[in-house]
Image (cartoon, helix red, strand yellow):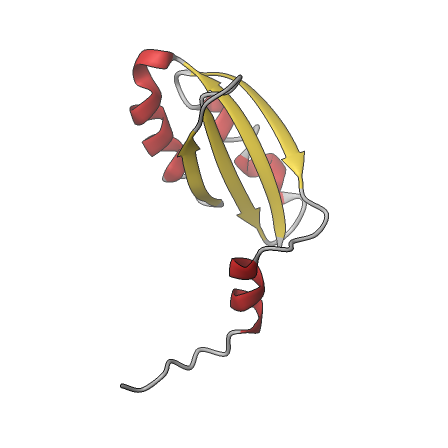
Length: 95
């Protein structure tokens, strides 16, 4: 699994619409409205490094209202969420 963190500047009056459009792109797992220099943050999770080019410059950057992006590729994951998913074998506890 390859994870990319994408900071996005968007047209301010269209942030909710742009965020929803980005969230619907295959490979985008989450989109956050954030404070600071950027308006949105998108988490992109794909199976192979080559897929990043399909998702970010191929689709995300082409969303109407996206003005600028800055992409960071993660080397390792230390998130409990991701580690739990990696070791899950699909069993759920019975009530």
